[in-house]
Length: 148
Image (cartoon, helix red, strand yellow):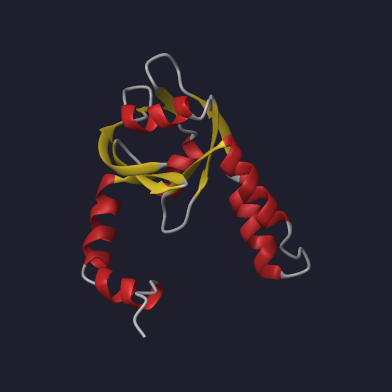
């Protein structure tokens, strides 16, 4: 699905050009509309319409009687908006989402399998510097190597 890192800049009107390789995935899946919402770690999540429906199924089954479920669903779904690319492949990110992610002008757009993430470039650099040294340790804890 979505892979890679792409450094971009918002234009004067605050629009972001979705990288061409990522737009190709949308075309391959006949996806015209996609969804942007608050992500984790102060980035934005972007989902195809199909994947958004999968997310809705998972999260709407969380118990609304649990405080944490309510908080998560409120922030996640209230922040969501559907967007379409214009003919130049640009999207307009709402101010409240840019504010949440600390996005000013320069961004890093990354493909993370079933979603795209949009980061403020400086925030991405900080995150990457902190996370990269623990990559192997994390892999060892999470990935079954088949050793036994």
